[in-house]
Amino acid sequence: MPMIDALIPESALTPQAEARLFKELSDILIEAEGYRSDNKIAQSVTVLNLHRPAAVYVGGEPSKLPRYRIIPTVPEGQYSDESRKTLVRRITEAVARAENGTFEDVATRVWVFPTEIPDGQWGSRGLIRSVADIHAMLVDDPEQWRVGSERLARKRREDARVMLESALDAVCIGTAKA
Image (tube, rainbow, N blue to C red; front, side):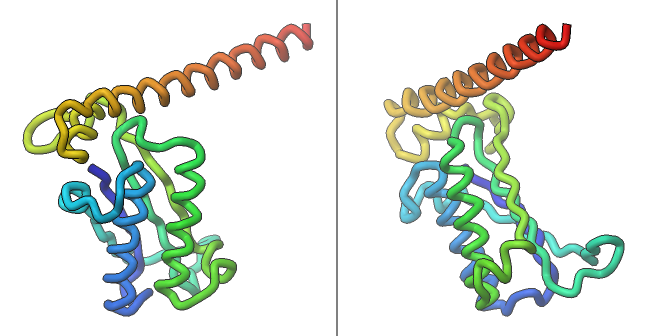
């Protein structure tokens, strides 16, 4: 159930370019979660909220060119490090296409913040939805909840590994200073 918050200044893009961009952003995020972009269920629950900043400043001065802030949000465990990198690149490329510009011209003005909502904190239809439940719904197979659980477990193992490595580094640095 991906959600996208897109902060795009008014008149930064033509209405047609904006419409194409919104469809492309939705497809990109669905694919980043590991689903096919033509998945009708995934499409039906992918929501993009458009925000129009009243003004955008850079260094305290009004920005001369449009700046974009895209916040793709998914349930915990849906992103991997690689999918985050691919997501950021593909979103930036999509904005460049929408502007009819090059990646190099647009990349410095596109900020992408892939975000995950912790399991047990994704609410819809008046209920809390687990990653396992969401996955089973998106693939339209209640028996597939295990795949969602496995994604979450993989992500939490990786988080634990990173935390342990960081703690070990801190201990080693502290020992070296002593």
